[in-house]
Length: 176
Ligand SMILES: C[S@@+](CC[C@H](N)C(=O)[O-])C[C@H]1O[C@@H](n2cnc3c(N)ncnc32)[C@H](O)[C@@H]1O
Image (cartoon, rainbow, N blue to C red; front, side, top):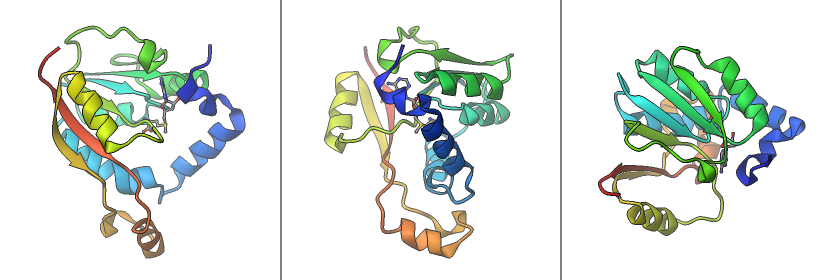
């Protein structure tokens, strides 16, 4: 079975390129996205976390290390699922191979839902409207302006300052 958002990662060459980019110590996810993301989610101690589009689940391993009670990753790429299974501790981490859109999630099972998935051609208005319709109230919106202290190389920092990169939305479910 193939899933639209995951096909890319089931191509061996593209996957290796992606993994190589993520290993680079100046990669945009670690230098720009992550610091703001961590600020937004706050303390994860004792939280049951759901990660939509978990990839290798490296983030899950980290959250469990920070004291999360359990971590469930949803992932559409078969190759990513294999990597995630190798990454996660069996005791409290698991990955489910499915498209996010097709998964029937258990009600009230999670304290925190995260998703770091690339979605092109959607506007802030689309996300805002979609979340509102699904019963969420937006609590915070960030565009992760690069912070110089997170970079090893000032050149990368100055280059990143010219590129808009991540949109992060924190929302709380209030009905539905
Ligand atoms: C850019 S990677 C990010 C992985 C991880 N969230 C991280 O931050 O390291 C996006 C991941 O989301 C998965 N994905 C994208 N759309 C999906 C969908 N509709 N259903 C399930 N997985 C999806 C992809 O297969 C890929 O592994």
